[in-house]
Image 1 (cartoon, rainbow, N blue to C red):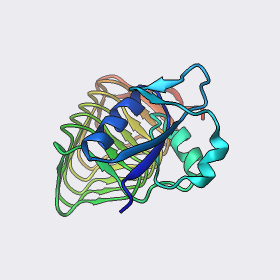
Image 2 (image 1 turned 90 degrees about the vertical axis):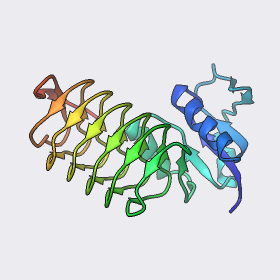
Image 3 (image 1 turned 180 degrees about the horizontal axis):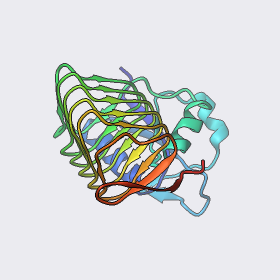
Length: 203
């Protein structure tokens, strides 16, 4: 496999993803970002000329925003592999779609299915038989019990806990430290312990 990669995104999330690529001995070929005030990241130059991306392959979407990852995945030919930190505990029976990034200390247990362009962030825990659909973000130290389903584009906030057999709807947001004990509707923002509806997530 070609070990040259380029990235869309030069923010804080991108720094973590780039360092994972370095650990895995990928060559950082180019980094792109729309923010013209950002000219370098981790001593790599940042380009703002997205027209050059049509000539690139192995594009990694280093974007923390779920909607931005989805929209960019529809515009560019993205990498057909994952960046998984060496310290991740990944079950041999788990399935992971391409473009997904897993940060240091994450745990993914038996028979879990993870979709495309997901983020499993630092020390997140996903237990057995979970289904994580495309463009989901499981934030640092979030914990999902067994048989949890997280639908497309949803985010489980930092330190949140999700009870077994719960479904989190599409593009829903679970607030930091929330405790989810029942199903969450599409586009709902949920906060607190137990998690309660706050407002609609307007995309």
